[in-house]
Length: 362
Image (cartoon, rainbow, N blue to C red):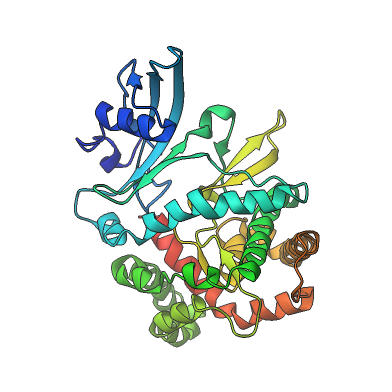
């Protein structure tokens, strides 16, 4: 089974002493000792993620206070030590800082709000996070609980739990922002500069399209529009990550795609539940970022072509009902207003998906 090369050998500091100290800190118990070695293994298969280096292990420990052996399966994200695209992406620690804040503060508050109206927002349990001396996020490994990664979604029924999750995430964020004037500022983040810095990856996608316009006469008329498309990319990306002045902003997941979610599967192979992962590039702006991701890097092209309007309707239905149940007193966008916002941001769809796909395929 192929793995990412940088996950085959763990950094020297990620050792038994480190995990013992983490367990002591998390449990507020200085008497904890490990009962066996923490054997590290790669966190993901090749190509399943790009914005960190990941490992898994099982931590078995005992406290002198109880003398009862306990264990927990964990998955962790760290920064790469070798030079390359991942190191460039993570060098300022912004992504780790965002994810630590999401898991330690924002997601628990979202879950609390939603629990109050009878909904459950699920996410992996946060164990530990730090930026110094090394950047790391440790979460409970839920793969042993039946959660598995899927592929592009090709049915409306399997999209429903995904839509429910992103609608809960968006709606809870709007309520939180309405109660905290600093929420939008604290959660403003733009990936525009980072995405544009990976010009080799982005240009390859454009070059492949340009090749079609040269090779096949029927595509020749797209050559000039494609050049303009490439020239305007930075401006469009910068605009996309700025909070909208004409539509209700939300906290976007920002990397809403099929590789960043896990599913529960029934005996017939159908998705019965979905959980979102990887909250590293959440950003306060128009929901168009997540909604275009839903069309372009979650659903199959066939489902998008045949059911796009239904997907938007299902999202609006969930989102608006949740805002009402959560007691939101502000304006709730209509279905027509969401459609108009998506039309306004139409250029974003292709540009953003092209950027993210380039990174995913690296």
